[in-house]
Image (cartoon, rainbow, N blue to C red; front, top):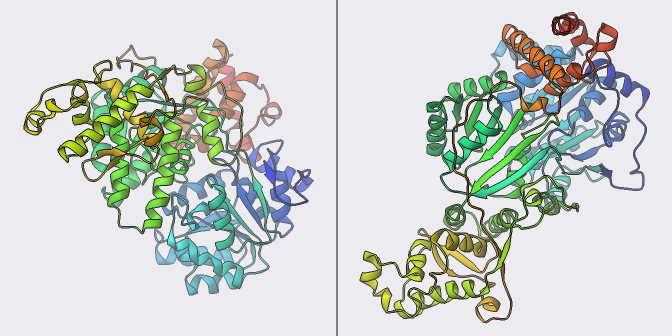
Length: 618
């Protein structure tokens, strides 16, 4: 992590902050520049923090809230998750509450009284509530430690998740100039970073920009060939019995994929904006509280999901931007253990996304921004070099090949596609000039392969000079080539039907002024249903047999405790903490207290039970 300005060097953590880190959260050291951020805010300064999901952003405002006098106010767009966020804090002994529309009047009044009486360490609220005159008056009468603006990219219209309610947060600088503010986000390009700084009036803040790399996540993108069967194979061969998120573009797809998985014995629930609010809430809570449940969702689901043991995120449709893709895939492996970000991607995805942009009601500038986002996403999908390095480059970070993504582990072969591309471009030109017709990918491929159809006969395509000039490639190979040419701007898909036209970079290829290398598309492996490997979680990878058995015993105990308390299992202990306990096999309360993630409150509440589980597995 790096911080801007002359005082950017990491600072040693003050003893008070380290003491809170150890006693409350059970960790013995800070990561990156967490210590410097905490020191900045605790000392009354402002901060802008860009840190990946799972990087420990919340500690950067939680600890200053505990160290400073007064209550820390956390502004978050995530009303549906505030109750769980508060429960997680209470589980480690922090006095926390929330103010939102889910509270009855008398409950809200009780929370307000707690705030005024100084009985809260942290209070969560949504931006639209904060800017109400009544709320501002309430905050004016309270002792405030700080303002934490979570998901701060929501203030940027350049970003992928703009929320107009965030624009009102400029009131904080105006009405509370002496209260430190910290803005945090897990996803921001340089443009978004600049805009959120300007809009939130954080001109004097110190800026801390962490590496966006998530080395525990393996990024994989493969050609779409019956995406549901491909998803089934991913789950049954790599992630059986583990929690995951599957993203689809439409509500209908969400319902169909969830049903597909259910019919094959895989626990899955749908989530989209068309469901009743009570159903969405129930499905979200069940996902958070269960081990091994899969949620199939549109992008309406996910922001702020603090479930550390999501072992995979799958995309069955192309995301609109790298920011969205990064944030969505970042919900996997928050605990730092091995996880998968997988996508099935095809030519139809490109055509659909282009059409959505062209048909949108936004301004031309909005459409240009959307096309730029999509072009960057396509470049990531079609890269033949390290996928992680390409992803990080988008956020202004340079990286050597990671040796852990699909393109590093199995580098794609390339072929000289110059002549093939010229044939394709010629076919598009001839159809347009000689027949005054434009067609989508399917008909263009039929012409190049010389395949007769009712449409071909009606339009006399067999009379064209390009009829049958592309028989050296199969339909699948032509679709792969088209997808890559679309990504490079050599061809474009326009209009409702995705008709193909020459793109801005077609000239040099068509006229032989450059050579063109394309990737050889891998043959997708057919999904098969193997015998269930249900049992050891992937979180326990690398453990010997005895520690793995201890881990599974601890995991079963945790599930029972969580069920009794009606809380998510990770609020008892995370997978990473259970792995450490299983490895080190502490034999006393003092030894258990040395395990990362075991704070004072959890030690007192669960210590004896954990030691008993270990003794039984000895």
